Image (cartoon, helix red, strand yellow):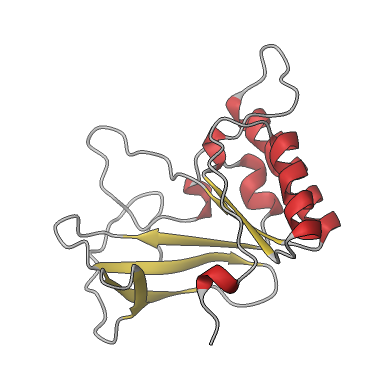
Length: 174
């Protein structure tokens, strides 16, 4: 049987790199190692290749997303980009997050084929979470309850639905 070490996996620790550098590494590993997916963890640490004076962080993030998506597409590689959700302000209740809550989201949401969010509404119970498919260009949106398996370092579908408190506010569903 195959093990992870037999798979075409390349891990690089490269925080603070420019998007064009990461795009080059994606292309290199696709050609040399045959990778099929690239994961960028996390987008807010990626610097744009060129930065305009006075440009916003959202514009910089959008430029980085453009470059990474173009490089992955040209190399025939799927791209997964991990991003931080915006932080709540003082006194805000934690609503169920959606794609608009991506930090500096602008083009992240617009260019993504799919946006998935992992949400733990109960901070006292880290074993339970919800996977929210907030955007899917080619299919349905929805959510699944998850259960954390620490010995495997993975989530699995939780058969007992998580009770989610109802919040009324700008993100509440009708």
